[in-house]
Length: 259
Image: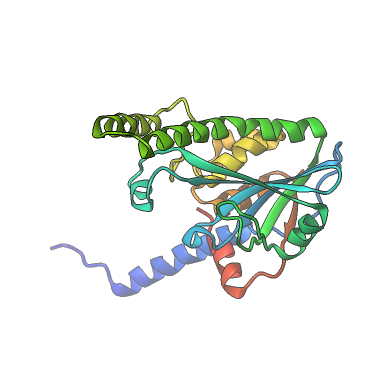
């Protein structure tokens, strides 16, 4: 006869696993702290919206120049629908790059509220890791975004050809080329599970930070929330700040999301 597992044992095992998970969540909690001193009059911010993208989180980068002006960078899927992205299909993404004056940049760092035109840039952000960088590193981060912008330009040119195609043959040709572009592994394509907003942000930040480069090579966390906490816990050079007030729901989500 098969030995039956008692419900009490199942409950005890579940409580043990839940306790271990909560201990792991607590071990990755980040408290506000200053960045380690470093050369450079510019700043690099790795910023998360805890409840963005249906609770998975959304990551952006912000560069602040010597005059205090902020340049915000956000990467999102563009070519594929949400359903296609969930099925794992790759496609050309949209790299939104918007700028703010010094006053608006300071207000954003106080409130977390963005009011820009790009994707995911009209939302409230919750937490940032930051560190000083040099003007040369500032330019290196912007240069790292150029392949994304080039891929986007190719897509937009082909899409325009498709829209204005004179006959079905030309439309079919453009459609095939668009599909091929979305599978071109030589391009920095958007892939929901393996190259999303957070992967792109960390790739760009790696152009200015060796700790981020090392982390990007060995990371296994899936969500932006998990990556920000894991990286912030592993790199003491980066400071931690909260942007504005965090709602109770965001606090709970930020605590529990470590994947």
